[in-house]
Image (cartoon, rainbow, N blue to C red; front, side, top):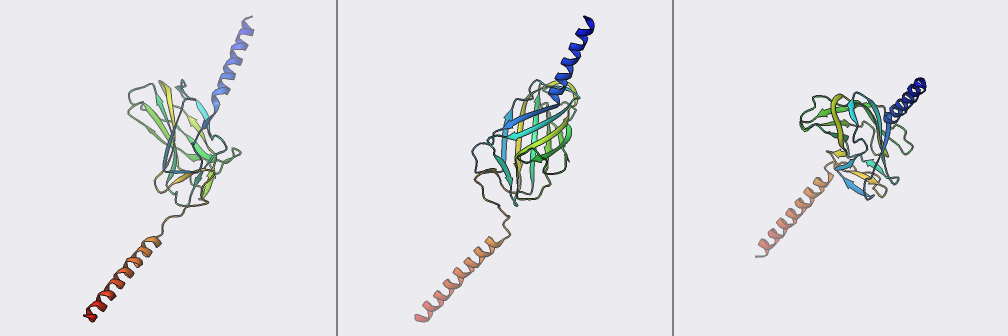
Length: 212
């Protein structure tokens, strides 16, 4: 009887361990055809998880077959995940791991990148993926392989954030094929236009003076 009980507990523990090794979190990007530079979406799928040094694979998958398009102009782009914990003071510990963008089939679009990591004074922890893929590019989700720190706190809230500091990204479908940086041609054309206006005005003034 004791042996059976031990086996049952062991199997339950193994099943629980398998369950926390990987999780898929759906992300609703909102209306398609939207351009943005900063989008934050809250999630609760990791709430209640303790910080016990565990490894966890997280797949953020965009719902409704939507995708994010990085344009040529979107050069400084990052994907951030922040976990708020039950601690109200600095944890003094960090999340670590690697990550990459994925296509519509869940395949990696780049080699795994080491995540940047930060810990805030309010008890939150963040990681950031800075993709090095070429642009333009469409991706359908983000895969993270995380190692949690050891701390008595538990996760109480999560945030998924897309951030660009150099130009917009888009939520597709219904997007332009690409957006390229302004190379200065617009400024040149405006300058030529103003120069033309000044030149015409000068010529008119000269003609008026000659007439009188």
